[in-house]
Length: 423
Image (tube, rainbow, N blue to C red):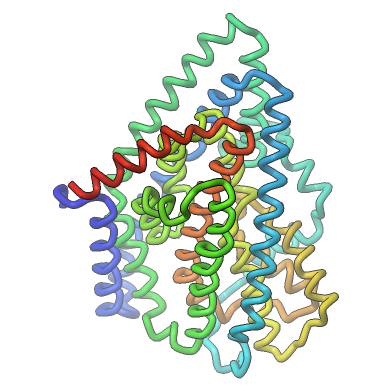
């Protein structure tokens, strides 16, 4: 396998996982055997994410050193995130009307899954509101937030700590050197973890297909097709236009992110590519300080693929029950998704929690979400890949906006990338 690149290895693992899952569909023994392999890979990914986010943010913020510049950088990032994710929600709603995937489906004839594990989180989000979301960003115990893998409070603490290092001048340099060493060490760890990626992909896909079977797709095929077409449209047209505005070809960006997109797609985990994404964006001409700030914050505020899916799935369930939403109700839906999709980062099954909260608020039967749990893995894979493209482009946009994008570096990297692929 070593003679093949990571992308090829992952594709082979993906195909093998589907084949094994199809052959042993419904076999609990096979599930029990391969599940730990996938779990180990996900644990390895989670192990490296928080140290990298902390070290990257501290190094980048201490490097910026200017609180005014940091405020400007944060303001521009959040503004861009909000505009693009709102467009994503609208695209999802329009797609639901064009494809009408829920029409003609009867809830009682579809396979259902248990949604109880998401309901408690949904109630917490529903009763929390915007104020509590903002309060949650400020940690009462930074180490507890770090231990829990809660990114928003961790980011908040890391930004403040980075500013403190910059503020104390010479005394802060040894601390900064320490975190620079941590960052380099964690990138080495990431490279080792990625060697296990094909095994993790094989197990994750194999377990999904073994449990649910390919035939699960048949009654919900229209929803799956609608989601995939919408995601492709959003990347090529919407993100393509944004890329064109800032002087980048979206297909060039996709080309340099090929390995990361295949990994994100097959694992359905944005976290699996976070370190590599920061590294590639820096090589593509984005300053380290901006890439290390925008990408981690984008993981909580700029999930384009997830917001498209949340809007489309909410209307799918309404259509399934024969509920027609008025224009005002759909505007309300947009506003609800704008808020809830930003306030649940770090919650397991975040997209389901957002959809459940939205359905409950809109008086749509929340139990309807149970019918799409079987195909969620297939949908999660594509929305994760779109999230990765969205955050990569956001880094370029903010770098351009700050006037710090290195066009020559980007051109040279793309050229060397093309030569390496050709060889």
